[in-house]
Length: 153
Image (cartoon, rainbow, N blue to C red; front, side):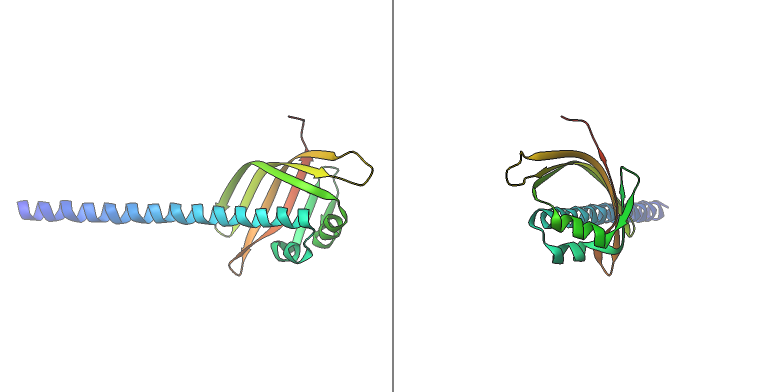
């Protein structure tokens, strides 16, 4: 009887350990995906500052939709064309929160964009944004973005 009880307890401990290990692995996997999404977003930011068309085309999905605070929407081609025409000199992203659910990720955060043109004072845009990413062929790609003005700090 005691031997049977010990085996049952041992089996329960092994099952608990296995389940705990699986949960830890799942959590680690989610954290890893969150970091990969943020890394793609960082690439996007760098590509905007450096006007790197190749990287923009790689990280922005062909089905991309930009929803601006003025109610207008545009697609990937318009976004890339606009970015390449900007004189952005810096972009600071903060307050980022990322949520990964399967093959979809949502990032909410704030952005401070700085623009400079010869003979003009530097302009700053303070924005709050929500970006949606999808995982296609093992790569995270931006599929939607909404930005709106936020108050000063």
